[in-house]
Length: 565
Ligand code: HEM
Ligand SMILES: [Cu+2]
Image (tube, rainbow, N blue to C red; front, side, top):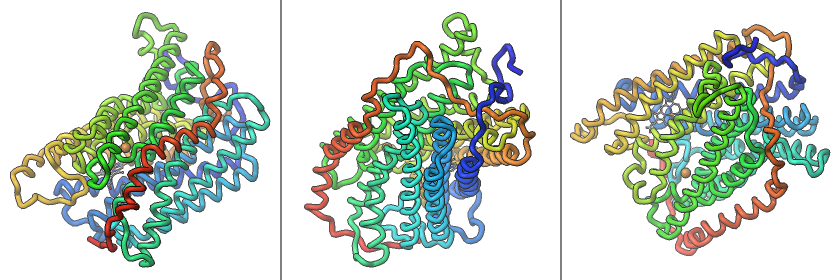
């Protein structure tokens, strides 16, 4: 079936490797199903929000409040969909690359993690739906949710740690059986991602367990708001790398196979993941540049550390492009850019993530603006920020996750991504891109013109400034509608691949790239996790000790709980 011009070839594996173990399949499918349901519900909230805040839908159905809906959208998409999809994806690659199946003990641990997350999300979700937790996905104190919302969130976090334990167990088992060998790239990256996640979530776990839960039960009367926000953002920034690293795994490890190429280097990708751990954690203050109680020196230090992230980002761009170019040349491309034409543009498993990569160029540039200390004053808490993370998270990452879904579901259900489904996926990618341009670019512009984020529809007493925002708001509503259609199409394809697509005769390929033969073996130091974790904690101590000790030495009077809704 392979064609002269590399394109979509149905992804039926001819040298069929073993299928997934049936029990692993069920476990991974549970994660994906949970993720897709969250995606669908979150998208309904997104559409209603986009229409409400532009004045097109004034009263929301079922008496829902705007901020309630916004909480649901942020929690379901930013926290639940991402976490469940990522953990399902990591489990799938771990079992594929570390011997074909989880041991019974590992799988049991993975299920425990899943059920903890499920119960946590149901608890937190019920609180949001009954309007007892309208505190947005950042749950800033002194907004006061029902304690069960915080307990549910804690279960989601701890459940994700338990899932990490399953991954570490499988990795440990492989290392023991293969002493001295570097772990397969996918599993190395999964371990790095989970290490980053666990170190990062320690901050929010401290906030939830020691501040929010006691205060929301009324055991302590007041909460130190600045301290709670500091713990939150210690987590909130690396959270974005928890979203991004699995997308990078796909770019680094799986796409080379889809483009019939080889992974350019076995060491650079490992180095970049370690640098992401080091530079994404001690930098949360770049979300608190407007926070009055933190000294400018510490903000500045964390701004500098933030910019170090440019190094692994550019290493990634270089490695991925080199992989594409080598693949194109091995397929006979001539000239400087001939390889571009050898890429399988007609294959949605390639197209969707590559469009996502392109969106990352303006998205990343916007992020540099956000983090640039004084420049942050211009964009802080405006719609610019919302535009920024819909371009990065809701496009670069999400399109990559869509690209993954288009082969991962078939690999789990042993059904074929038919040419029609592939074409529909391409249409979906185009709709998503157009919708996002229409929604996110105007968000950036009105943000600079001063329009705040996180506000229900208002004309601000017909203030002339707010009049200027009107045309951009109309574009945002159109873009939001297109995005909603995009999610409906995606879910349609997912359901088709899950239940209805034709069954494959052979097993469906799980694409794992091979490393190019000329690439030297990675230096063992890259797998000395204790060293990297120690350096990370050292950086965290340097960046945070003095300001946090300061918050304890000069405590604020603290705030009683507030319900503004
Ligand atoms: C149907 C597609 C979508 C639409 C129409 C949409 C629309 C919106 C709008 C209008 C806001 C800002 C509201 C405000 O600040 O007042 C928002 C916030 C947000 N969106 Fe989306 N969005 C969509 C998809 C997504 C996706 C796929 C993700 C992530 C995976 C996402 C994550 C978020 C987050 C985290 C917020 C911030 C919530 C907050 O400020 O508390 N959105 N969305
Ligand atoms: Cu950040």
